[in-house]
Length: 73
Image 1 (cartoon, one colour):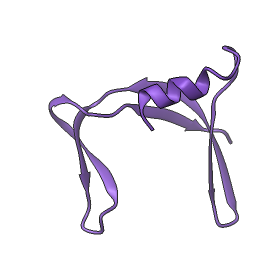
Image 2 (cartoon, one colour):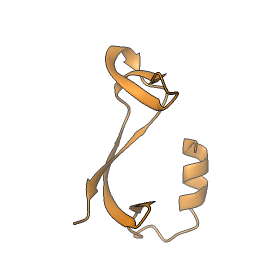
Image 3 (cartoon, one colour):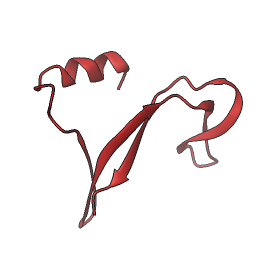
């Protein structure tokens, strides 16, 4: 999802609506609250199995925005 797509989606809701991140895997459900958005320095990369990852550090900002979350437990 791009920043524009996220803005367009969130514009459909009242300004004071809380954003919650939801994750489900098999019989587990997890909820997270959004703490911050950041653009860290580093590069996107994939591991040996093709799974996306990120290597922190380097000379420039990442070409992506990180959504920092906390568990809602």
